[in-house]
Image 1 (cartoon, rainbow, N blue to C red):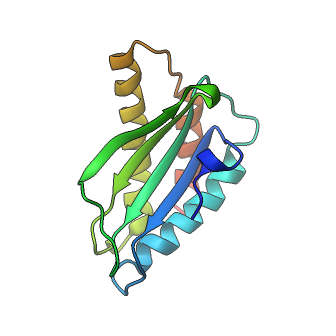
Image 2: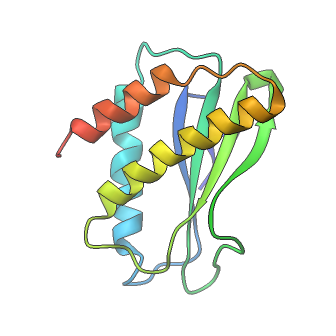
Length: 139
């Protein structure tokens, strides 16, 4: 799947890297797809001085992430876009949606830490508003 960094940049975007389809990761695949759609709708009229793409690495039968947890990826200064990568476990939990939303909150904490370390300004309040709105759906 092409990431938001290669497409139109949204203030908050969700991407996935799927390492192959399995029965165990089906919940992750469906959950990321659902949240991705919801975020696109919820981010209208939201602005920030930083754009964030959260990329979920879903392990499968072909490829698995070589790291655990969350980490910062690339930063594109021209787009003010920071990518945060999230390695998911091989087996999705019973409620993957809640787990994914919590990981997006965690990704925004990573953005705040990155900005503080780099001495950059990153206003994530609007991004957090998007996540809160999505969290309230189907919840």
